Length: 411
Image 1: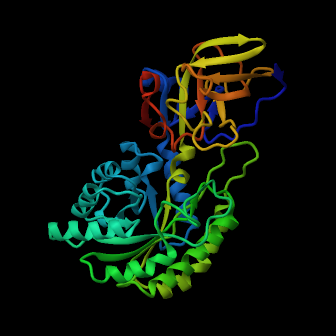
Image 2: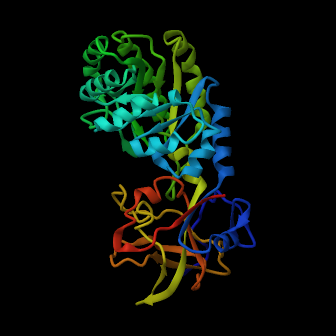
Image 3: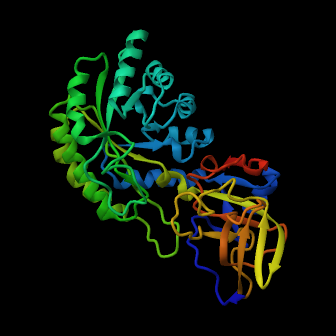
């Protein structure tokens, strides 16, 4: 089957001589330098440009934090350490990565349910801010701190009484495993007054992957209002107010990029009252996917071109074991294609060809692109899955069927 035009793709990367360019070099040259496929490649220039864009739009006193879980590759984290104001980790393993950067410990926070006593001990020793997700965590942190002779820094992660409308993944509102229900926070704060922990503030994260500026603006307004109510019972001044993030990136046909100017303008309007009500606070926007998602690609090589009853299959050396999200098995209800191109034949010569890109695994779920209009790929060509800088390798079942792990490079 053929089509007069390729599936429209919005490319973050330039194209020269019909080949994708990343990090200032052609994809073919990059693959030769790496020496093997599959691999992930992240463009440091695009990451830097995204941070600069945020700085230009958000209020000057908004502190920008990177959520490590989006992409914990040490080189990416080291690069962002020079660009952002803080890090947010979700495990003791991520904490080890960020402690090797120049980021000051008091600009690092630790969120996530079910923290073990050992993880809380490591956080207390490091001097980072612990976002408490339960009374249990608060009591353990206080006990651990007392045994170490330190006063741990603690903020309360709040499960708000509102959600982030149209969010791809709701992290607050209703029953949730995350944070402390807003109505239970006052009692927790009163108990904290009697414990040897240092109150820092609140972490109020209501959702992620949102492309609707109006929804993010409403959530930010509600977050400030909730923090005002909760601060009445706080054992000290609010020194940290994490407003969450929620900024999404477009993945699928028909999706429009977030109107960042609208979000920034609205937040600028909220800041005068926020500064008045929280004079000692650092206001944080925590972002992961929005900083790195569009700066990365996943690249595999066509091993075989196969036609089965009229349908073209491009069988590659990569698949869902490396990029679960692109296969549609990481939260999608109805499978949609990520943006995919033949990296060294981006624009088809003549008519585009409908083809499915599949991996080497013995499962019909191993699909990276289903019946997409692509350039006429040959054996040895490079398939590039775009929008792959976040929740790629570390969100995938790399041990499945024991294939080799892909390389990762920051260029």
